[in-house]
Length: 410
Length: 75
Image (cartoon, rainbow over all chains, first blue to last red; front, side, top):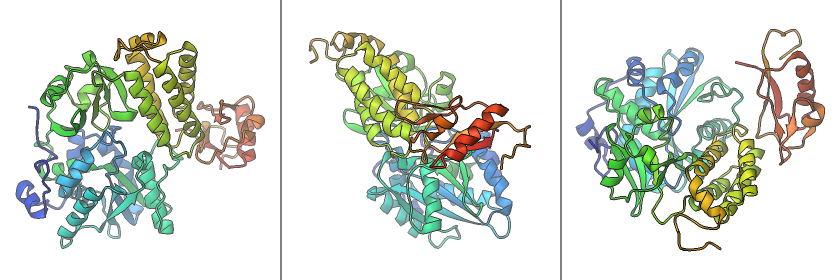
């Protein structure tokens, strides 16, 4: 089955208000600890890109709760990448499902007499349609007995969506009343997914789609869970968001959208990896299945290389955009990404072996040395391009290009 | 925090990359442990340090003008 509805229950272009939402999905019952077991049973993984097991992220929260006064549950809907729109689509069409997830989650995690929860929806500045949709949703359910909810606006740039940025913003807002959205240095890299603020109160961040899935699991239980995937595909006609069943292959997906068979796709977006089409065509669009092939769906971003596009050129453009999106907080990212972008730009014109050698060397200096994963993703994408477009690299070393065979490049 | 009596703990050197300004003092104070990359930022070993390395690393931690380095127990 190509299209399956587990998260996007509202038709495209329509917004489900609270009444329509409970008519279609039913009222959300009050949740308890059984939600945690249900989420563990379906092995739900985070849809922000990292696919970390959701239930495992809750363990440190459960440990912290007995002595904590407050749990802040954050919906991360700051989709930083231009080629991703799934979260915006959920916010526009099914805002109540997202809030259901956050409510259900706080109900099942907050125990103890004095502990309370609050819910924050983290959005990009300027994302006005999502903002009005979620604010209306909060108003529509204001009379329900639910934790207080509010929106926080993030500066509209890529790293604002990093969960460390979100945590830092929530913390600094509590302390100073103002939010700063730089990624936050994690003193304990073994536990990056929960941050105790100065009071020891946990802040739990989940991606918007993850939260909507938690909302549905709270409602239908583990048995009726449907392991669909939400994807954003770049097509000649613009971005298309689809929810697909786990038996949909990449070939069926692109065919259904009328996309010409590409030579390669960029899987997982700008911080993802290039994959040869022949390797991926018959694989299912499913994070678990892809993982067994050493691939990651990331945040569900699929960018097919158009027939007249040069993969190396495209990689250079993306690397340059990613360098511009650096928060410029850490040296290896501030200086490393522009160096990568510049070398990639040179190589996309004429692939000199000296530049290639230097690019590989610079790429080796960056991963794991920043406070967030922004530089690591960029480097991964560039390195995958050098592998997947190896043949074209050879052409480029003679100033030719596979995408433009007749045209001699300047 | 990490006094010299805790010999049984596995100690690693960590850096807060946002605090580091690439001044390079650490590479002078702990030359066997830390080298600088082409932009002047330190390359920090991720391995568990032995006793001699710990004493060199401690100098770098104390000497960093940005307080970007710290020793921590490996997990």
